[in-house]
Length: 244
Image: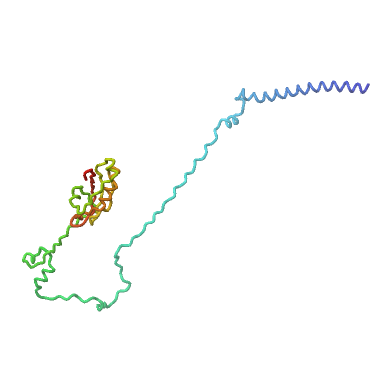
């Protein structure tokens, strides 16, 4: 019986304690909520010190300290005056004149006219008398123009200076093909009158080789420019005809 009583009583106590704990927790939560909501709904009930602490703004931060600019120190150079006269440390009692140069010799009398004329400036009284010296006028020789290394002349001028002329042979293949015409050559004649350079400008292909061989043997009189032989650049025309 005693065990049954204990078992029954233990079950009842457990059921009562469970509801009791829930009720206590709900009551505590209600009190906590009231403590939190009451100051929010009624701010006038709070103390003034707490309100001022909440409403006052924090003090402003201190102003920033500006760095002081570094001062530039300018160095002023002292320039000593030139040829400054300084007093001697000790003044001698006796001056030695033996080391001084001798005075110039002065001669009395009348200077000759030629001496005065040699020393007198132009346009003086001696010049008016015809005794004074006259300035020497130096004439500058004109510079000679620069001699060109090569001049270009016409074919007619070059033909007039021709001394030796070799007639070109007519190629047999050109005759058989009835090819004729003129071969134009560009020539450079040296200072001695020989053919220095020769190039074909135009003309039939069959006739060019014979024209070059013949003109390379030609000789000219040297072309004189300001009395000096000069290279000449010109053109030469070689004609090929069936009758030639």
